[in-house]
Image (cartoon, rainbow, N blue to C red; front, top):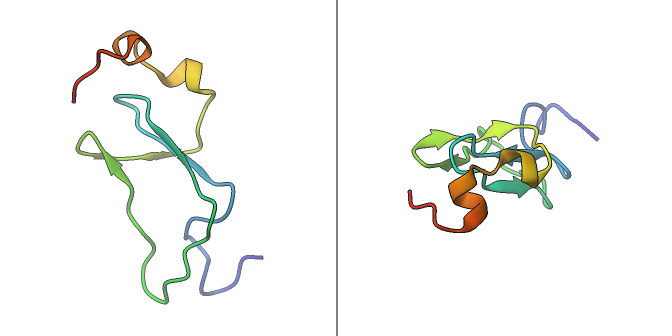
Length: 69
C-alpha cells in the first residue's frame, strides 16, 4: 500500500539495475524512512529503475566473469 510516507520510495518487488555492469537488485523490504528514500549506485552511477532479465543486461565481459569496475 502506497501512503504519503512511502510515495516515491522503493517498494517490495521494485527492481533496479546498473546499466554499466548489469548488476541487479530487488527490494525485499520497503523503505521505512520518514525522510527521502535511499539512493542506489553502482559503477559511479545511479541504478536504473525496472530491471530486465539478467541475460539481457550483462555485458559480454560480465557474463564471462572477467569484468572489472
